[in-house]
Structures are given as structure tokens and as C-alpha cells.
Image (cartoon, rainbow, N blue to C red):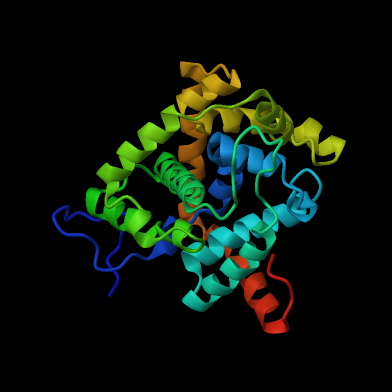
Length: 284
């Protein structure tokens, strides 16, 4: 029987089995999405790989709904999918990544198949997921945090990251994270792209007017301080208190929901993937 993970009291032994669905709050993924993109793209090769990409079908500024689907489907299949589903989605993503590589005019060298760059992206996804969960529900105990960390390697191994590339434990990850975060730099063209993303420039004007300002608040609040500084954001102690109150309220609300409602939209996109596989439709 699965040990309850949100209230584990024995801190000497790891959980026998991780029920990952306990850690999936759909609303958190939507709130933290843009901040996580900034983390990922703040490594210059990843940033320029996205900004310079010639794959128009994957550009959020041109196809925001499709981009949302492919991104959340990736998270869903990585964390919830079977091995066969992960392999099929890896193949589909690989096909879309094939043209993404630097040219002679690119400021930095990059290739979408570089596992070191994919490791950084996976590290951002793990860091963001854990940060959001703990903001909403409080800290994980040590055994549960270790189990969640080990499971989260799937965020990288669903693509080209080898299991042995994932830092061996949370202490090794912290050293990797601190070193790579300190080395991140947001160049002006990448910052312009981020500001358009934050201000929801890919959406209709009424949506921008209604949601761009609160979206900017959440993005600023969910970034590490180093990247706030890179973006030129101001963040006060009052802002932090407001964000903390909102996130804990959301966390409390989420715990009242049935599991399937709490997991939405990740479970819906996983269902969509399974339907697409069955019908032979494109996965990406």
C-alpha cells in the first residue's frame, strides 16, 4: 500500500513508492509556466535556440494554444506516462528539434539535441515544480523530497538526458543549480522576448489588458533573485508576503478538490496524447 506522502512522519526511511499524482497541481503549472521558461532560456544557448528557431509551428508568439498543448503534454507524459508513451513522445519531439541548431550568424553555438542543455531545462522544471509545491503546501519531509527528486529525473530522461547525468542526490543538484544559475545571462534580445511573453503579447488585446499585470507579478515572484535582477524587476517584502498568502490559499483550495480536478489540465493533455497515439495523429 502506498504510504501517504504529504504527511510522512518517519524521516529515517524513504517512501516505499512515490504517488506522483499527489504532487501535481494543475493551477501551479499555469501560474509558474512563464517564470520557468525564463529560467530555462536564461542559459544563452537555450535562449537563442528558441528565439532564432525556424520551426514556426512551435513558436508561442505565433501558435500559443499549440505551444501550451505540447509543453503540458511533455510534462504529463514525462511524469505520468508509460515507457512506450515516453518513447513515442521523445521521437516526436526529436523530429521537431532536428532543425534547431545554431548558424554562422548565431551569437552562441547550440543544438537542440545537446543533452547538457536539456539537463538544464529539466533542472529548471524540477526546481520550479518543487518550489511551487512547497509554496502551496509547505515543505516536503526529507524522505519524500528525496523520492520526488529521484522521480523527477524523468523530466530529462524523457529526452536525451542519460540517467547518470542527473545529479546523484539533492545535495549534488544544489551544487549544480547554484553554479549554473550564477552563470545565467539574459541578453537584450532574449529579455525583449521574455517581456513580450510576460505581457501576453501572443494573446488578444482584451486578454492582455485583463491579465498581463497580474501575470507579471507572478512571474517576478517565482523567479530566483538572480534572474529578477537580470530582468530588472523590483520585488519588495510586501510583494513576497502577498505572493505567499496567495500561494498558500491556492494550495488549501487545491487540497479540497478531487484528484482528477486537481491534476487538470495535465491529465486532460495526457488523455489527448493517448487518443492521438491511437488515431495515428501527430503528437507534437
